Amino acid sequence: MTEFWFIRHGESESNAGLPSVSDHSTPLTAKGLLQADHVAGHLTKPPDLFVVSPYVRAIQTAQPTTAKFPETPVQTWPIQEFSYLSHQQYHNTNSKQRGELSRNYFKQADPDLVLGDGGESFHQFIERIESTLEMLHNSSEKFIILFGHGWFMRATLWYLYKYQSENKQKKEFKTAIQNTMPSLSWVFGMFSLFERLKAKKIFAFLLFSAAVQIPNGGILKFRTTTSRRIDLLDFDLTHLPEELKEITWINR
Image (cartoon, rainbow, N blue to C red; front, side):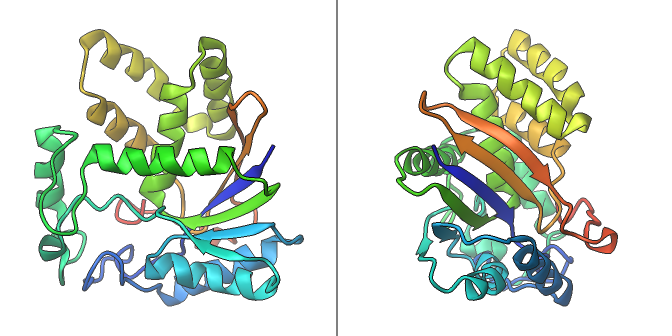
């Protein structure tokens, strides 16, 4: 069995509403750097492996923690953010300016739609999640820390709830989500409605994502099992002072 923690990067300039040259190069703000320091202070034992997204904001968030445990190997995995906009659409824009482009993408509800160079489809995004979970299942390490992104973490939760293979596992995972994130309880009733209406899965994903609030620096803790199930252990914000837990629509 492997315990793995997904840690969301600290506040980025994009989260703060500032323009970004590109999705992958957006750095942390001063607040984001503080959140990264608190993450490092929270860890008292070295993991067997660090996994870091290739995006700058995740790399910067990981730096204080990897420096604290220099003997632990660091690997880059494709756990970067859901990048559905093209490089051209993202270039030198802020989140408000990208809002209409984002709404237009999701309105089309086409899971295979790719908007241009640098963009990916919803199916390609989910394939990255599947690949990551498979690598975690097959890992020989007992404790892994992953520095990633909000969309990726929320989509992992959604995927595990929707696709845990057996009904009992699904119910147990639902209970774990409700125990760690009580505000999500209402979502499952909406899921049932969506299924009865045969709504497209991208809309169910959006509903779930809108309800899940993971502040920058938040930690989702999981464990793989010998039956190839993944259990949700905890949603941890105890390491963040109240002033660093603030979350807005932009930085969700």
